[in-house]
Image (tube, rainbow, N blue to C red; front, top):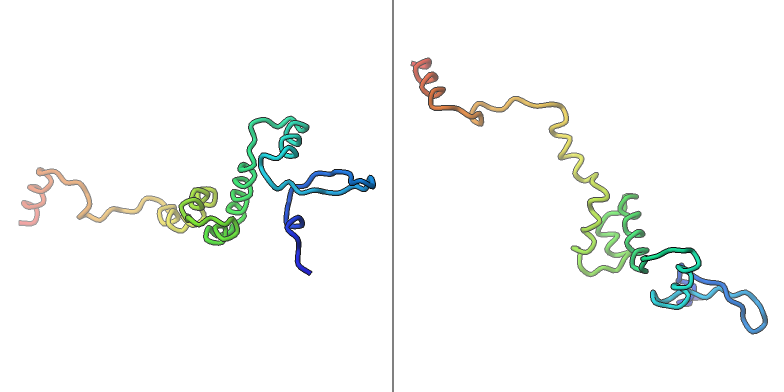
Length: 127
């Protein structure tokens, strides 16, 4: 038996049918009256349906979900839209950052700043 579209919804609100039985109806659109009523009852202001999607994606990334998997889960066609969550899981940068954590390393002589006086001194010293 397949699931109906109603069973796939996460947010629902209670209502009574003609017999007085309690039914749970899904909130299927962001602008629905049930959504607005829920926000009003809870005292939440300036909160959009999209804010839930953003929170969901942020929690996924913070839990270690790879961005390409999040893209598929969230249905984004453009990877740039998913990349905006990358800053929430900077672990992929840890390996690169760890390269300098052991302290300052000596700089090879060829990269040191030398003045013309240093060059003259070195030339006379080598002679």
